[in-house]
Image 1 (cartoon, rainbow, N blue to C red):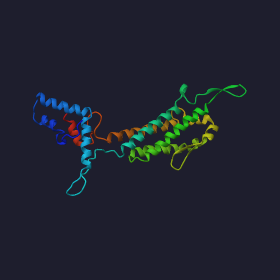
Image 2: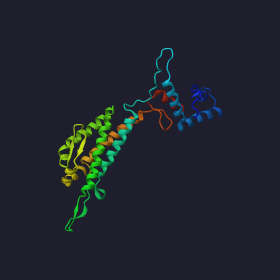
Image 3: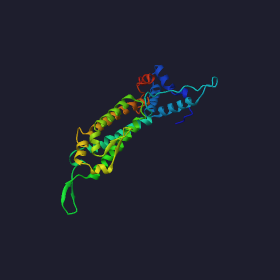
Image 4: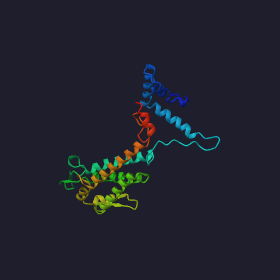
Length: 255
């Protein structure tokens, strides 16, 4: 697209066809062309280019910069929102790996053979540890991401997750997991592998388990981040402007 065009003509064809009262092919063709440009994102690119120019311009007489146009109503930056979405998705997935029951459960016992050739059914401690380690790492990443958030819903949701973890501190301690001063989890590999795996299963496996509840809270936090994402930019992928922008809502009414 030629970004050097006169920006004052950005909506000219649209406004002319709207106000002239014409029902001819020229007016309708202009509307359809504008609508097509909005749908495929061309208008969005043009608008961004225009406002980038106005952001960098200045009032030569006063020496003051021209005020920037703010279209975002989100409490957090796009980068923060994306990080919260990503980390909570990961935590939900690693928690699900732990709380899943049945044949796909990481806590399903497998056949093991000792030095004397005796076969028994035992927990695969290494596999369980690997899953718990992923869970702990993802949990800590959510805590880190939430520290950069200013959204009260996200903050309250993560605080709820932290408080629930504190309630399970005693059980977590029995399998080598402690809570540090930053409210993050620390996993002692040796202590975990020596722990009673029945206790670990009780803590992490099945609906209603600690892992299940943390997954629920992670998904709630993720939904709040999704809500913030809808506020971060009033121009959306469907070629419409968000309701937070009254002018945008008015523009949508033309279609």
